[in-house]
Image (cartoon, helix red, strand yellow):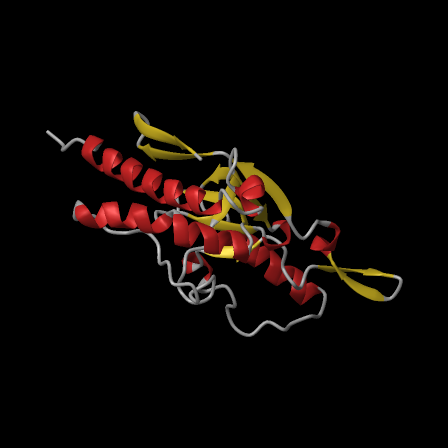
Length: 203
């Protein structure tokens, strides 16, 4: 029979609770405690940086909104290390790099909120459509088969820098009408193991 995940879940819960307890105790005497620790924490989403990505098996595509750099730093410093430490203790692979300077371009994880998903990998068709549109608009010329490698692309920005509109002679990005940040309040952590196992940790 497969080994139980209960010991791993208990280890993750213990480590996360310990980290949150220390953080809350340190901030009780500061003004930031009321805003960020009591009844949860406010994280900032960046809708202008919305991203489409596919899973490793390319069986499903997701629309995700990344969190801000400040919110990502807090998550990487506070929440990911105890999870990774628990995985290492049980001989499992860690999922994320927590290098502060890794960021989104240096190998670090892109922390995000998934807002929608569809079956299959939609990225190749979107890239081909954007390529054809740029060619028709004279923004680029065709040189051989430009979409040879689209099947290997795992993520793309929702708003392409080439998809622009003209307004009174000025160039305006289509995403410019979106707010720079959307605050969301997070008051608990949920860890899921398949469909049957899971745990919830309140802040």
